[in-house]
Length: 351
Image (cartoon, rainbow, N blue to C red):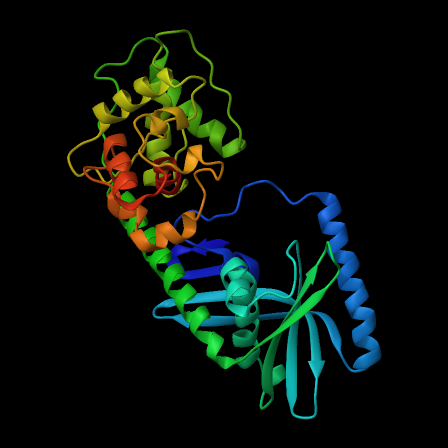
């Protein structure tokens, strides 16, 4: 996803759009294994060969894009359709999805478990509807599920009514874009107090040297003796670049959790009232789990069990949780208890 906030434009692909959400999801973060990708490609090739025999005029891996106006935002979406099958006055847009689930399954269960796949297809239908290549054609969508274990298949046909899923996701994206826009406006009035009332030997040239180095390289190595004021110097430089629009945010990593304390103290000493900065200390998972009343972690399902559903019920909007510039761990734990959502996942979403 690429944001052009000053022009109120955003560019992303169909998969990014279909999987986009403000909070966490039930899926894990591991990358798809190579064998799984290769197996998926094998099935795509098999279905392609079969489709060529049945529909000689079919097209494959068809690029498509379009711009959707969501209020005062221009959303450019692009993707590549697996198969486009032409009829006399209609077009079927087919997406092939390999899954590890015994088929057939009820349609509502498929929709629940693989919602993003349905949304991908719905997005392709919307793009096709505003694309001149499909003008005056009746559009149909087909999801072809392939069980990689049993090698069985199930076809689901969707129609124009699925546009509602697209519009609902577009509202979620719009909310995010508005939040980012407000964040930029807030940073433009960013005001902070210099970290040092008087400069020590060597500090007088630090900011200038960091500015020069940042214009020459994306990576800067800043070394100074203990007690020099590296934390304050680094923050002063980064906050200045944040205010000027060179950076979108600052991520300050420490080797130990105790190192976070010094950074937070330094930030708080530099902030003025309504300084325009939001900051957040991401504590480790052990601290979040302490006195946590959720039972998911101990029943073998893990903290991500039905996480997306619980998050949606709770209606948590991370940016609205900030009070006086930050969010306390106690508030996050309280929200977790009230809405039965893992507090660590709330913190991750806030980050």
